[in-house]
Image (cartoon, rainbow, N blue to C red; front, side, top):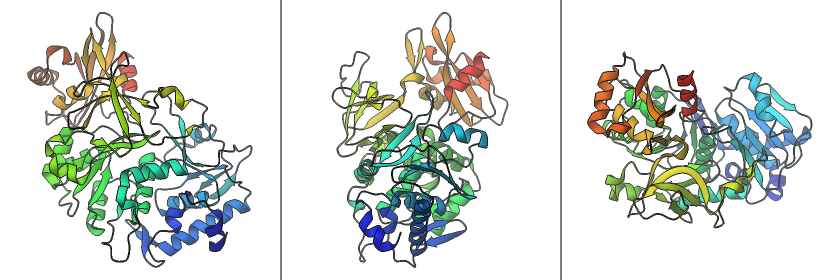
Length: 480
């Protein structure tokens, strides 16, 4: 495929155009890592070469290509090359054991697998709808992971939904865009989203091969990064690392992938002088709730909220009977975004979660205050029912984190013959946990029914790829 063939043969919605039409001149660095950079011209040439390689190997339009490459520029150029060839991108985490690769590939039936050893064609590939762009998996915290099909047009819409006026390409007189730092795997929705977010805004990308506090601090200073995204686990690591010094010029951090403890947000802001802003979304709908810089300045008392709905996003909070609740009441969060994912490659039906008005049941509990800020209370499936009294695990966890010896904690509901469920706390600590002291701390801040019946020391919390605690594994292990 030549440049002229590309220019006339690829639809305007194709996400690969974000690399090919990036405003940077060929000699300017576009994709950087801790060890070096790839120029915009080299990136565009590699994209065209990969598209040509796929076509020469017999990969047809609308077939899938799986990619298993280390986090870095090669993933970006492979992704864009697959799209320019008209194929569907299926990212695989390099940490995935070889024994599990086939189990992940089987539902998506790719025509080829691209890894560090080259391109490997496969038999009996599936064919997807024209608009399909890539396939990602749900987090699997409440059930088996499902492969979600995202479309070019749908993903462009959700990027524009968040970017707003920044989606316009900068002109020669514009202030240079701060690089977009990608501190998570490009095999995850959070990684792909933030990479495309930066490219659509006309910014260069800085990609971390894996998260490390010292590398993060160096990249912030070297590339003068003013805002970035971080999962809660990374925020906690930075808070706890005494060797991390100044993070200037970092001003804003958006917490992604999992709920963030307000305590960790306050610690980060107090130590590094950067606002930590939550956001909310799901793989099927993208980010639907978030913060603006003006909201952060005007409503510092709201820090801890997920933010307010983005333009075009409708929300409602409903009770167990499906009736809408008033402001300030906790209930199930339903969301109606302008677009959502096309469906699941596994055959599961996404529409089963959508009501007659087009609202998606998120499975999360939340409340909306009088100013329109959304406060996420937790997963409906995580809510603990102790003899009719409802307990949000996050509320108990926040109290336990007040103990300086508690590094991490997760509270889960375990079956109880008399009460139905009772709370149990799993505590990660470098010290021997003192159950009596933890119980006393809880009784000081919580009503009695919210106090855990047991405190279990554990080396680490089981987590999904994106850092969400797998509470069901804790319950299973406790029950033996």
